[in-house]
Amino acid sequence: MKENIYYSYSEYLKNKYHEKVYKLPVNLPVSCPNRLKNAGGCAFCAEKGTGFESHNKNMSVTEQLAVTKELVEKKYHAHKFIAYFQNYTNTFLPLEEFKVYIEEAAHFDNIVEIAVSTRPDCVSEEYLKYLKEVSDIFHIQITIELGLQTANYHTLNFMRRGHGLAEFIDAVLRIQRYQFDICTHIILNLPGDEIEDSIETAKLLSALKVPVVKIHSLYIAKNSLLCDWYKNGKITLCSKDEYLNRLIHFIEYLSPEIAIERLFSRIPKEDAVFCNWGTSWWKLKDEFEYRMMEQNSFQGKSFHYLNGAALKLL
Image (cartoon, rainbow, N blue to C red; front, side, top):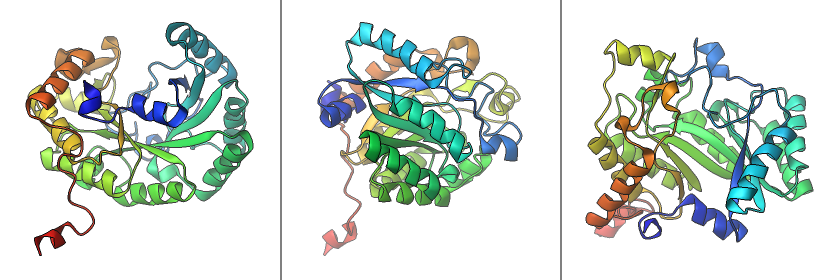
């Protein structure tokens, strides 16, 4: 069903590697520069970061990969894997220390890709040059995952992201010169954003030709600044119907060549005070896909705004 309405990440990986490929998360003992600049970091960030499915950061990279690989092999019969450096800002390490972790993953059996999650303001030439060397020596693909969240720079400032649009665009252009893939993380229901911001974010990613987008619905983690705001009534969140409406518009304006890795967030119930309007992510996914089909909606339906679109009026 979904193959007819949006380009899924699983389909993207099959096209790229000609078989099923699964991510193996890695958790490094690393933090984030924004947690140093702004006490507590981004408003939605909690002490655990986002690596809820990751192993203990004190385990070696090899140990973490081996444990998850064994589980995935048994369950999905997979033979190719992505070493996914997931939590916090993985390039916020001294380069020599970063190299040790990356090369440990590169030496692991059946790793075809290394994905490095980071921030737009933590992408520099020396780290990219090193990753290009790893790619060439080990014949491994490289993906950089960047957290943008929204194209609305006012919202970025309100959420204490510590960067604006310029840093994101700079990071994308630098990464593209090395021909690495890019996965951009976005949140469609940040406080202060409207549906126009969802559309503009889709247009920005399409114009920059980002290959993959990971869409999150905002959850409110315990012990975060956002949690305090939520409890004190400083912020309000949009309804489930409004989120689905934003999601549909985002996908309609998104280039059909951009793969979609996720539609809704996932977080253990015990770690959040709000997530997905009290509904399971798979029920939301079913409802979203039903609405898409009911409205005759599909990815790229409104993708006709680039390449001098106004000239078509002549």
